Length: 441
Image (cartoon, rainbow, N blue to C red; front, side, top):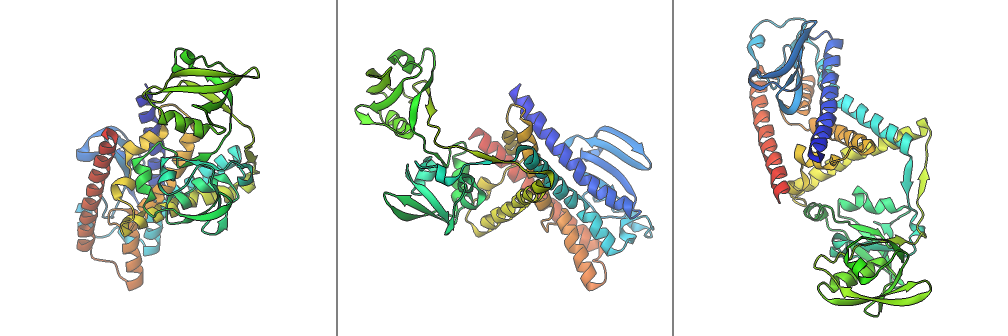
């Protein structure tokens, strides 16, 4: 059932974005009196259609191949490669008969709609949810690095005070793209002094390899046991709710990460864990299992308090817009790292299968719309790439036409469209294959 929910969410999310993207082309074409012959969600490859109907001279439908969608605009060389209509004299309702500036707007229509949708989604999410964060001065115990953080030199108890010399105000800055994209320097307070930690430019490779592992997290003191799982190792050792852990094998563990580290260091070994119960010290004995899971959850100290900033509708707009455009700049930086060789393409790129895992196996509408907003901006960026067969390729050719004062030859455009088609086909094979490889890996 969980897999069906995941698949349903990704199909719904992508369908919304594809329809709206193509609607941008459709409305722009209609606004300039250009005939649109087809409007399809998914591709009706080899003429196979799941559903169709005709309305006012346009065929609307759903194809069987879920790799996008399209509008077929009369008098335009597009992915359908239907050049028969181009053999006749240009008609006033055809794409090729319109001024270059009108054709440019038609080609940018889908991208513009994706940007508008992305901004709208992030705007509404910001208005509804506000912004929740933690002030760095609340984190008096510093941070605890996961294995990824440890690999770059961070240590438990470190206090990160600056990123590239700019003071860190909020905890979320340490988990933002500026840090996780790599290539920055963290100023850290440690043992009464400061040190510089270089975040490697290829950190994205490590993040991809170790999905699910945390980069860093706040450091909490251990207060008391919140729950003991029935039948667990902890239950057999005699743990009870409310016990306060103070030591493991006579080593004090004031912080939970210290306790967790010592437990892992004693896998398959006997341990003595001292707890305070009703004001008295009690020693609990047992063996640490192979998975190092004792079966307890703990209450953390409440010294770290988050804050939420709420915004009016108009205050939320610039903040939501900034979040939306950050998606585009992050994608641009990511591609730049791929071309520089700092990040491997197979680590950085994901297709529909990878996207589906982000939606999860349960319906969470905040997460759903956050991903829809992110994907809308990512699609705008991808479609703007100057690859023939993408909107960006058409835009480049139209700009060349406007500069030189005459259109490029139809034969050149046909060949460019074929080259672009094979480039996209190769990318799709790579991305799908990469997704499947990651899934099995």
